[in-house]
Length: 468
Image (cartoon, rainbow, N blue to C red; front, side, top):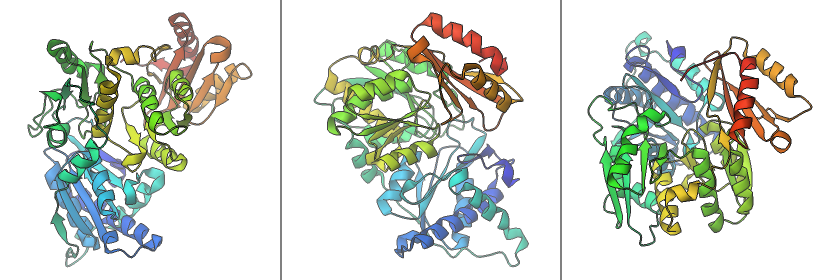
């Protein structure tokens, strides 16, 4: 049963089968063992190294799962600091605010309401994925079974409830400067934790008018799926931006660590284009600094970073890799196509609240419309992600590489990247799904003619195209 809930980057599954309170207890016990052993191995004897932050989202199953998780943590002997119903970046802040052993957020992010899960972080909110501790936590959890112990173990760790909203608000608002400008913004909270976060952090900011959409987060259902990467889920925010003549709109996912923006004309802004726009903003204050970007991003991202005097740094896809690259290079900022944005001054962690603050700040300082800032960056033609069913993924990638060998620059940083931009005006990246027999193609070209021609040439080599 445990094997079904552990994924590459977190724990996630349907509730109550296979994820339930008994499983949550085991994971709490296993995570506590791992986090405390890591703290002990570091040689740090500070008492806070026995404390673990626990937060939860608004899903109906989250309170009982959080309680079972905390029982498991306490049974191992670790102490719990319960921060209540918060957004995921709040837990990253709390871990660093207290400098404790780590934290766990009870959430299923953008998944449907019948899902839940756990995002586990180590000290300094370092992400714990399959290769950075999650496999060990799974092993420790499998070894923990209170039903086989007689009498059942009694929790020895303490639990205390703490409220860090004042500190969190101060931290997030340190990234906001409206320069005396008034802005009207539509926020779609997707019935998720942004409904709490926006009110707690941004309410009362002078010059900021927020039009609320789907802010109720205790309804037990979603007005639309809390996944802003799907264009259909942005319909409400786009319509409201036009109706209210707002400066911009943003739609957050369920745990508010990601946001997708639309401009003043309700056009959806690609996260790579947003990364490129913000790069100049960060490099003004940090000349020559590194900017990390998802390797699927538009070529314009690298070009904009270089033109602003920065150091462009490609990363593999996924928050575990993005945060590590940011940390290793002391980069000031990073952006991913999935809507995650990372900040050196936010413990190298991602934050939906901070990207919101930063976009508002850039817009306020520019005195231009958001669409006008993005238009010159969106200068190439992109395919978007195209998925192909293929049971022989490795063979297909090898054949694709051989087809272009000698005619293109080849990279294996993440999947297969084929770069013919200088010669023929196009490049692409093909990655394998971790969980399905699927290949994912992202292709970009100088114009639509080249883009469409290359998609038609490459597609038959990748398998059966999956309709959206």
